[in-house]
Length: 147
Image 1 (cartoon, one colour):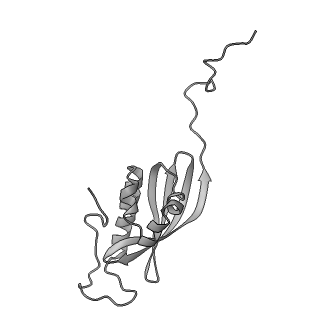
Image 2 (cartoon, one colour):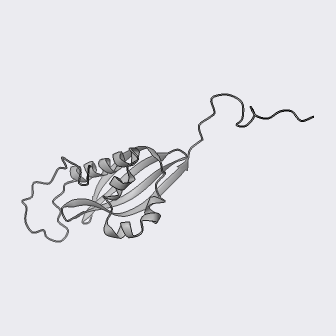
Image 3 (cartoon, rainbow, N blue to C red):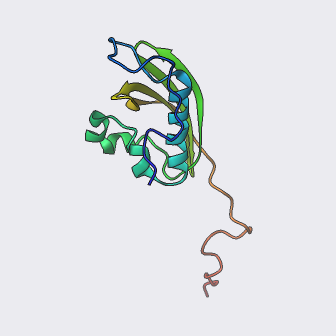
């Protein structure tokens, strides 16, 4: 079974050893790859794998976090990655059956693994439901004219 961090994650060229406050061993590309692995897990329907990227604090409020996601997710993209403070702000665009959601996620290096520590909505756009294959409304084939 796959786990986070994803295989092949890139680490910065810093030597292993004690870190100073705000210093991370994971570089920007490593955080981007982890966010892409998170998106891939959601699209594959493997929410349990995606949850592995969450901090212990987010896991304690899992219902609130999961409610932000447009499940099932049919498409997911990393829109941007920006270094900020001691972590990275990563914007994700997630598309579900009925809506497209833009999420702001905050990632930090926790115990040498990229970890989601915050999730919040930036935008939510309702999608038009898919049109039926024919012109009849659902249930019309069963109805008979009343006498």
